[in-house]
Length: 68
Image (tube, rainbow, N blue to C red; front, side, top):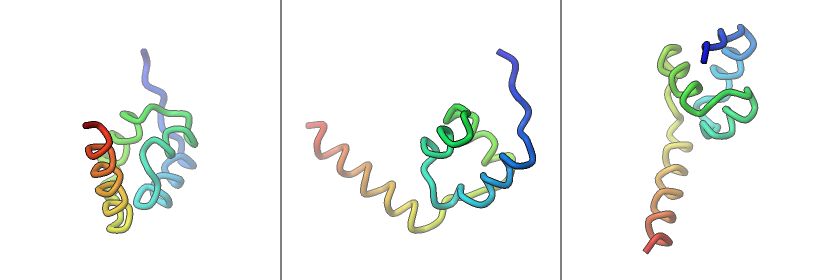
């Protein structure tokens, strides 16, 4: 599969929303794979915001609790 180049507008969306949105949500919005979103975030030097990281930790804890 040939990688599709990232458009300027897609990078604007990433820079604007990466810190607060899940990678799954961004992938759906941008019609990209989660892996592509993660890779582009690394290329752009983007990080998740503190509130988003806390939410992700809670979600992971809930998943672990319910998986037993």
